[in-house]
Image (cartoon, rainbow, N blue to C red; front, top):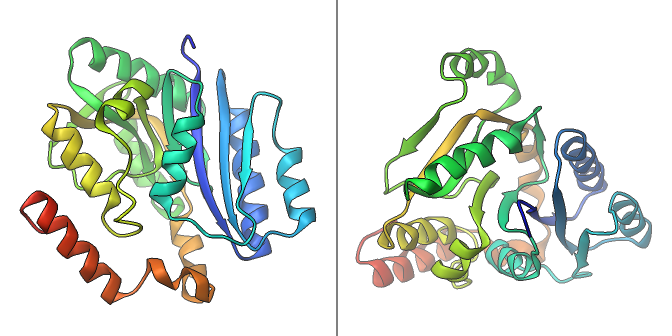
Length: 249
């Protein structure tokens, strides 16, 4: 294994633009990243030529898993991806990000320092939306090379370069698939904290998240994704989370 990092990226495709966005993301990560493998989990109504486009971006050591028209939840995708990972480290990533030079090397260096002190279970990259880059770049320069401790009640896992060891994921257990959309990440951090881990982020590891652009697409989710969204389902997940942990998320 050495320091191989498995980048696990779940993707739901329902528009051609998502294929284009994903391929740009994959090419960008390859440009600025060493010693890693991709594990791409793709669900949605995917045409054969789109499958071929994605396959062309993969290398021998990478894995790409298609679910055809079946959409599976994000925690289910992550659980499958982590189970297939061969790296010592697991990095959770979305397909609408751009990484910057040395992002992974910085995160690994910070993680190893924290690991020696038994301080962190998860370390994330520092990220901002494109329109906030100038403001955050000044912040990054002020704290260059440091990593900050987030409170142990850190509310969610931001899938923009979140890094942990595969051993940690196996110790905590799989993401709870009974929380398919709203609270699976908060549930995981609560369980992580119960084992004495904290969450942190590395300010030298910088990622630009295109969320402010890609959220323009969320209003036209296909009908078969409705099971993951809506107030009724959020309430059900909230009730289950409260019953499980004793407090509302």
